[in-house]
Length: 321
Image (tube, rainbow, N blue to C red; front, side, top):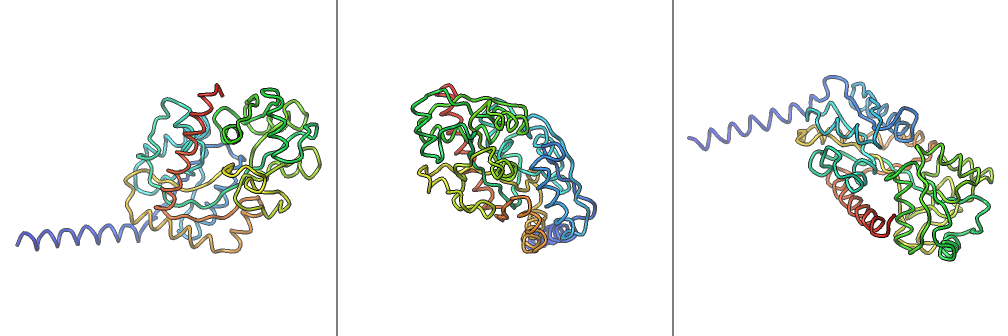
């Protein structure tokens, strides 16, 4: 009698959860972006949100909560109700890097979020000012070894992906360069083009105009495959430094304990929108690569990225970087 009752109760709960997932969303969904409007992540988020709204049949509103390198936005989502109506545009900085750079970020990236889907990535390229006597990555490494601590590399700020990109190169090759942090990518690029700093690593869409105009020289793309927009640029492995792979990835995270049915609904919608030609065209026009990973795969990817950057941060601190 009791077992029959328990089975019936369990079935009722399961049906209710399934129905809730099928009904979701019943009102607009908010996507938190930890970057100001107009930034690279914001642009990608808006392309994705517009396409996701079509698949969900509800508005997906981008809510910019910039500050502390994306940490403020991540904190907000970590504390939000786990109902699928508040999502986070997850990126490298606040999820895989910041927890190693700061003692307290206000959340546990592995515990407080439920990964939904990774949907795109932007490969990074390493560029130098034309005055630098290096036409390849190996020549840059040789130059840095010959002049330890003399070459200056710019970043958009301490602990950001452009900073950790060069720190990874330093770890892999044993070179030493002086870090010059800026308050954002724009001032960093301005000084780079002016020759006040010599080296920079960042997403290639923003650097592409300067490379094409000859104001900067691109040495390598930090990705396993060459880019469509710059097919002549060798990969890190082809340039002699395997493992020098850095990209700005973009994914969707929900608060922990969000119902599995809601996670599935969002992931399936992401798969559908990713097959649309107009969506892929919008991404490619911005130099963004489509890449879809499901909840389990995205969770494993975050774990791998977190461990990679933990080692880079630890090595940098150990060397005084």
